[in-house]
Image (cartoon, rainbow, N blue to C red; front, side, top):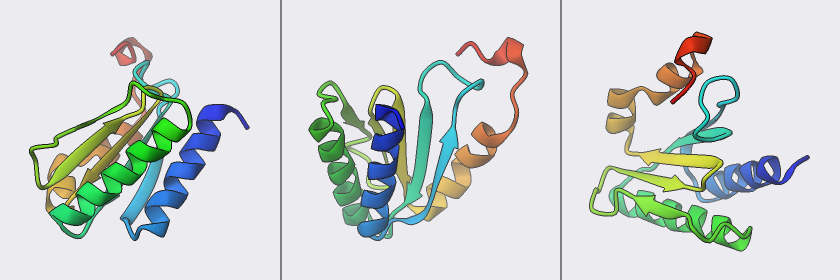
Length: 116
């Protein structure tokens, strides 16, 4: 496996170990040039989401991705951890359902719309 696939598996295990809900991974190949993978998960509360995002950020930094950051630090219902080639979204279930990222990114996208 390559480095980004190994990191994806590490992040998935970290989220599972820390009781994230409904964790999914989406392969962004042929869909976007912004990243290779997107992971989406839910947390049970604002504290849980904050703790999960900090755990993920720590895993990114331990893997050598030092320029990653958490977006949504002022929000209590979502966080985005940008690990360059791997993006992690963590939501409260209501916000996750509202944004429907799984639906948007799981659909096949025509090649002319791939350039994002």
